[in-house]
Image 1: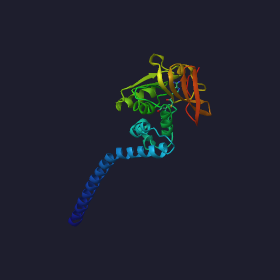
Image 2: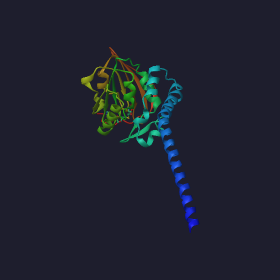
Image 3: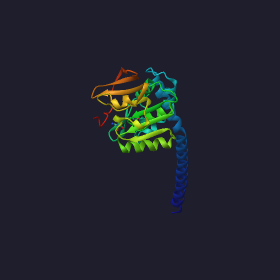
Image 4: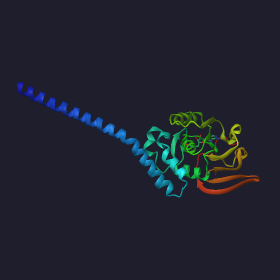
Length: 246
Ligand code: SAH
């Protein structure tokens, strides 16, 4: 009896020692992981810019810097965080998507933005593109047709202290006449035709980058001139449709 009692005590002491060592190791592991995590994510972001964006020819150093800075993983649903820096679009809920990082960079570069520009975005979605724009210009205006997506994007962007972005819930086809004219417009959902109200709200010399089409879409760069528009076809693309087109 006394022997088995002593053995049991011995086992108990060993067990307690092992579990407390495991727990403290486990805590250490978690602490290290939590400390490492932001670094790991910014490393992934730097690689994303190098391998997906610079490697495909985007050169504008301000655009590259903006993509290195904006924490894309905070703009995707929690369960997709690990894929935030992958070379693909991702679902953001309500049947919508955040664009592939390369497309965000390419479209932004095409607009040749200056600090003091006023930029309108159609299709706030997750708010990621708006954050990239906000890294580059003083005034960003963004319109989203789905209330729940706009709410979520506003929350994310407020937490990141992007205070120079104005939001509107509504049909972006009609633009935002009260805030016009704009130096640049970026449309991140595809209409079948170029919306005339958006052209009207561009300054002379202003640029618009816009996917146009139904199943087959092309990205167009438009420049407004004093006599009309110049339109250059850039890339085949695939965006969600612009809803509520008349
Ligand atoms: N720029 C976004 C991705 C946009 S996905 C980002 O960085 O995450 C396209 C978005 O356009 C979707 O959120 C969709 O709801 C929105 N959208 C579709 N039609 C619209 C319209 N007519 N006006 C405004 N937003 C529209």
